[in-house]
Length: 113
Length: 116
Image (cartoon, rainbow over all chains, first blue to last red; front, side, top):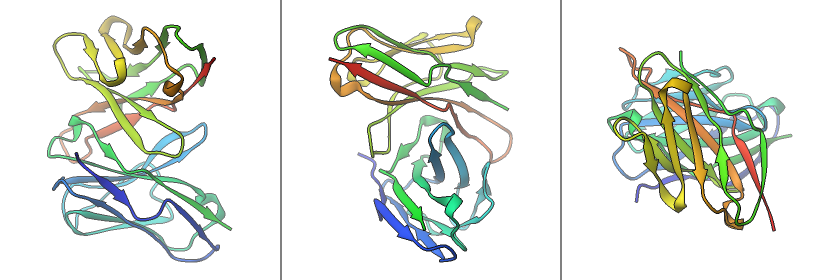
């Protein structure tokens, strides 16, 4: 089975801190995605990457950046965490055909205090 | 741009009863359609998907969905729900573009509650 692993299930950070959320997949997938999930808003795409060192903005990229130095790893960076970034963050990956469906990690619940 | 509407935020069903979760999409061409389930505190798991062919699609855990082009719908059904089906359900639509922007658009989800 494809595994998408997010390094932390729960994270508590202070306002203004730089935060790194890590995601690793083990199926040699080309595409990786970061979503945030909030009650009543569903999943919103932050960034995605279709190749190493490539990235594309999603619907809500403000306040975030990403890094993809290796194919299996896709990092989400909060340059200066704010309380409105408290959320569930979900990483996903897919193969060459992005429309073949995504495999999701278990999520990281980030609280910014 | 594609969009997905899940009209029901919450649905309550008695255990053993049948279930139908609604999903309407907006997209000009033939869409790629998906249903995902999210158990509390977990990521999303793919239940089933539709690309083409038979409009009735079978998925895991006894779920099925029917694509109806005339109604722009892709409703999820299960003949008899179990308490373990209590979860959040997401419908998603995918579209191909000429550039690198292919991806899935998710609905806001339907929270399924199972009554004993």
